Image (cartoon, rainbow, N blue to C red):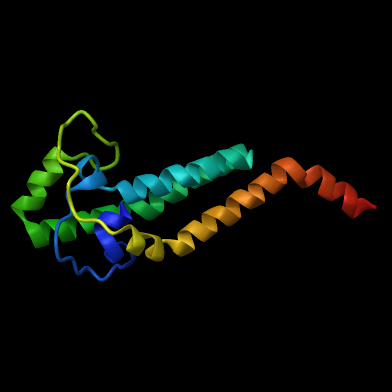
Length: 146
């Protein structure tokens, strides 16, 4: 998704040059947020703490719903009917794979990896912490007790 939308995904300035409707954006209007949701949901499950999942779902909703509404308003003002037509055809959060829309469009994976390196680093660190908890925690605690 970042490869299609570019560095604009990391800004809240409200300056958008073009409406991206190709690639993952042809299936769902917010593929970046869907991806963030699924990654964090997986980490919430891996934590093994049931209430953490509930806190995560609440916090995600509190954080992302206002952002999505702000972005939709911005895009509607900027692109008018073009965005309204896109909004009618493409769902907000749950991808629609049945439509045979074009996946063509320009994308740049090098820029995407550069833009997302902090996110990727955070994900890797969190997965390492969780793996340590599941696979090595007992051995670490025994070693500390000695």
